[in-house]
Amino acid sequence: MDYDKALDSAIQRLHDEGRYRTFIDIERRKGQFPHAVWRKPDGTEKDITVWCGNDYLGMGQHPAVLSAMHEALDATGAGSGGTRNISGTTLYHRRLEAEIADLHAKEAALVFSSAYVANDATLSTLPKLFPGLIIYSDALNHASMIEGVRRNGGAKRIFRHNDVAHLRELIAADDPAAPKLIAFESIYSMDGDFGPIREICDLAEEVGALTYLDEVHAVGMYGPRGAGVAERDGQMARVDIINATLGKAFGVFGGYIAASAKMVDAIRSYAPGFIFTTSLPPVVAAGAAASIAFLKTAEGQALRDKQQLHAQILKMRLKGLGLPIIDHGTHIVPVHVGDPIHCKMLSDMLLDQFGIYVQPINFPTVPRGTERLRFTPSPVHESSQIDAVVKAMDRLWQHCALNRAEVSA
Ligand SMILES: Cc1ncc(COP(=O)(O)O)c(C=O)c1O
Image 1 (tube, rainbow, N blue to C red):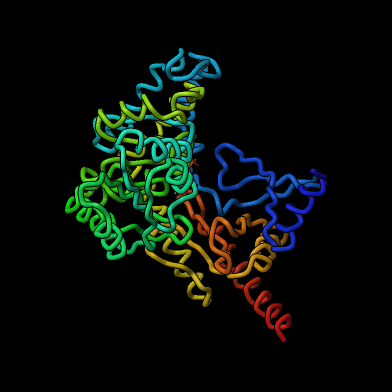
Image 2: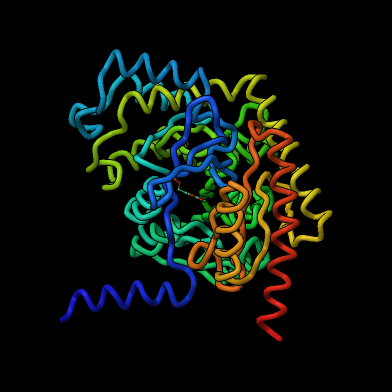
């Protein structure tokens, strides 16, 4: 085989479809986020404002987080030096898991390298623990859940997105005695819509199924202590396994599950994605624990309130310009473009001409034809920066509409 030729043609296919991904080299500056510097391929620099990050609350530069990390770095050094089983469990890991268990009012928690790994490792391990398990998975679940369900060798059913009636039909067609688990998200990050947590928990109770909820885009952001949408809606105790990340609103890195002590003990003991990998550096565990602790407080609530306000303002103003905003009442602001080439063009022009960085979102992250720009306002975006986005989008949207009209004429 001509391996080079095969690689060339695989890459070319992406260029032809307009969805070849270009990484932008940005340098975040502590204390200045969402300001950053873009290092261009020609070696020059440009000041930019980041509008597509998932450090939703700016915790990646928060003094409480940074000082915990400095302390841990000075006390322990760089890495953990082992898997959790072989010398890689430290007091920092223990404290982090206790902080997470307390956040979700569960008996225990288990930290993984990322929420991707936590989803994949947990969902692919559950059929080993519950032979004959059928997993019912929402059609728009994140790739990490899809991978975990796909790889586990057990039975799976995909229910239409957020369609509890369809879920009920699928369950009714299966053996009532079979063990069952329903896997879904509290916030679907690309459309920014909520999952029907209460209705799914009701159904799960009725049919004796376990529930598995990904709160990756909700932790830190919703609920009086930042535990997520299930906390906000009084449903947290009804969810058997909660999954989330330490890398988005908590601003650090890593992922976890929170559940009963028995469930956590079993996953800890059987999941290869947990067992056979180096544990998080203690410094990361320390920063994440500090961030969670901070976001449980009234000061954390003030950040959540400001973030929601900024999201509402941005949505209202973009809607006022007549832009197609997908608005389901969450903190995410997606602008539907519907074409990969136009989406990339808009993103490039925002960056080049206005210093506004919002990465185009293309297939396979979203279905073809639903390409979009996904803005993520934070409490640290200032009014002047919101003004700048609104003005730039107004100018560029008109330009692109003219351009499209000319192309189709
Ligand atoms: C819904 C959902 N689950 C899980 C993940 C993985 O999170 P992490 O970045 O911690 O791997 C993501 C990442 O974007 C996500 O959107």
